[in-house]
Length: 266
Ligand code: OAD
Image 1 (spheres, rainbow, N blue to C red):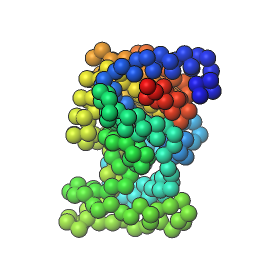
Image 2 (image 1 turned 120 degrees about the vertical axis):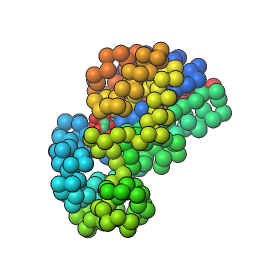
Image 3 (image 1 turned 90 degrees about the vertical axis):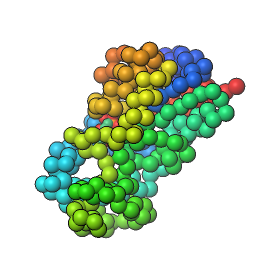
Image 4 (image 1 turned 135 degrees about the horizontal axis):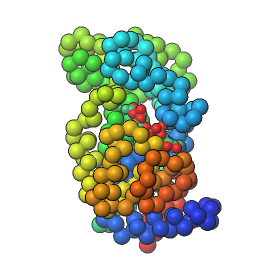
C-alpha cells in the first residue's frame, strides 16, 4: 500500500509511524481540508474556497446578522443543503478506526475539529467541535437552543429551501441563528477547555487539513510544541507553521488510511 506514495512521503510516513505507535497521548486537530474529498468546499483554497467567493464580514459575524439576518440565514441554509448528502471519506473512516482500535490499547486519542459538518460522527468518531455545528440553531438574542431541524429536509436535490423565512425564538421573539462561532465571538468554554488540555498534555499533535490561520484553534499546535510535543502536519499545501517535525504533504484521504494501517498493525 505504501508503495503508492513517493519515496519522500514513504520516509515521512515511516517516521510518523515510529513516533505515533508508542505514543500514549495524541491530540488531533482537523480543519476543512479533511472534508474536501467528501465534496465540501474549504474556506481559503483558491477558486473553490468559500471565503474566496463570499465576504466573511457579510456572512459570518454578529454584525452581519444584525444588519441582514435573512441574508446570513439563507447562506447557512444553502450550506446545509451543500453538506446534507455528503458522506465521510477514507480520512474520516481511518481516524474512526484508529479511535476504535485505541480503546483496546494504552493510547488516548483526542479528536478536535474546527469543522461544522458531522462527518467525523458519521464515520463513528467521538469529536469535540470548536466552531459549532451546522445542524444546531440557537436564538440570536437570548441564546436558547432550538430543536434540530430535520436533516433530510435539506438535500442538494431540494431546490426550495435556502431562502426560506427567518424563524423566531418561542421565548423572546429574537431571530434564530446557526449555532456556529462567528468571527469576533468566543469559542464554547467546555470544548475549548478539552482542546487546550489535550494539546498541552499530548506527546504528539497532528494537524490535518487546516490552513492554521484562525486563532485560537491555530494556537493549539504551538501550545503542544511549547509543552514538548512532536508535531505532525497533513496538508498538500504549506502552512505558516514553521515548527512542524513531520510534514505529510498529501491529501488526508490518501495518507491517513496508509498511516493508520501502519500504526494499528501488530
Ligand atoms: P481553510 O480553508 O482555511 O484551510 C483548509 C486547508 O485544507 C488548506 O490549508 C488546504 O491546503 C488544506 N486541504 C485542502 N484539501 C485537503 C485534503 N484533501 N487533505 C488535507 N488538507 C487539505 O480551512 P480551516 O483551516 O478549517 O471558521 O479554516 C479555519 C476556520 O476558518 C473554519 O473553521 C471557519 C473558517 O472561517 C468558522 O466557521 C468559525
